[in-house]
Image (cartoon, rainbow, N blue to C red; front, side):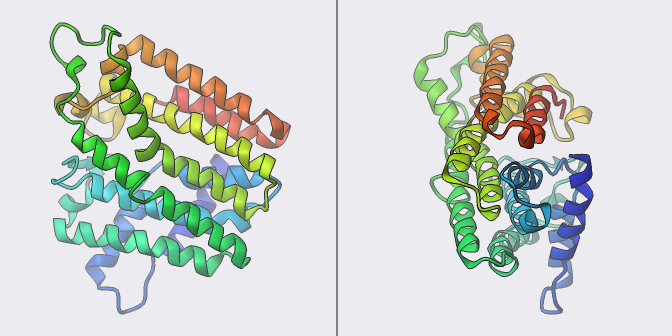
Length: 301
């Protein structure tokens, strides 16, 4: 991803400046969230998918910017006191701590709507622009990202394996495990899948290529969340860039809590191997996607 990060950062900076009608404090909060130090995984996925399908970085960049805007909005709102109530994100105070709660909500609102405005203005082919907007709006909506967050909040306190003598014994019922997978395929996996699909769309990918990208996204998105759960379970605040152990404290369903640490690691490895098999069709053009799948398994924050 090294050669992709600076073009992404430059595009995000250009897209985060507004005219005089945007209040100064709101603009500052938007830029604080959008330009915060981060891995830029989701925008990079757009570019990688485009490259694998024969497209260019330049034509895919509007999609990269839009998905990072939606991602930044989701983090702002996830961190709010009424949601996950976090005070640290990417090693810095969360937006509602740095500014205030009302400004944070408005900054998230602005980023979400700006994402679709950016797609409509910057993708030159109208058909591809409409398709990208459809994919991203579905991924960010009530049956995907927002629905997953709602169910995640509803699941707090239901995780019977998260405390007491049965913790991590691998005896969790299938209902709990399938429920957890459903949450994560929507809350985390939906935007990862949308990033990859948008990259394929803007490059004019074939149906066969889009199917392979979709299968890869399904496995990679879930693997990412399993590893995220593991990191929350095992890492410290400094390494993670946010408060560690919070999921267990709040009684959330997690893969280590249900399966135990080693079984959760095995599941992540299985998902990553499956993801890599899905993109064999791209041969050498999919080299970034292969390396990325390995990184998801090995990441430490």
